[in-house]
Image (cartoon, rainbow, N blue to C red):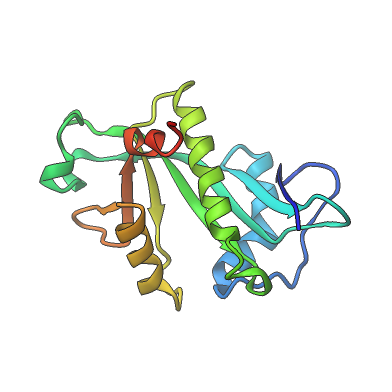
Length: 176
């Protein structure tokens, strides 16, 4: 099946009120708040929908601005960061429908989110990408391991579920 990325507010995007990803708070966010936050410039929601047929959301992510305080970084991550901190881009919400998990759509969504973060960093400064693993997510440990082992995200000192990946490393994902 072919997939496309759209802004959540584009005409034809359909959000199934019974969307389930395995985390009730993310399900609720998609069905109740994602469109509202997008329209109110709180965050940008990007959805993954089929190219053909009805455009039901099978996955989504949100991007918004974030500020990393210098004193929350591990000592090895403080290099090149001013003492007053730095701007970053938060991948705030991220989900794939339960029926589509295991098909590689999470990787497709994450790579698209990374690409949009790199694109945005060329317009407005952003030193890193930030993800926050939901503490109530039953897959929390698996998600933490994937972000840290595969993608090389690093935790903040005082928030082990908040992870950062410096933008220069994200950019390298798109270099030939």
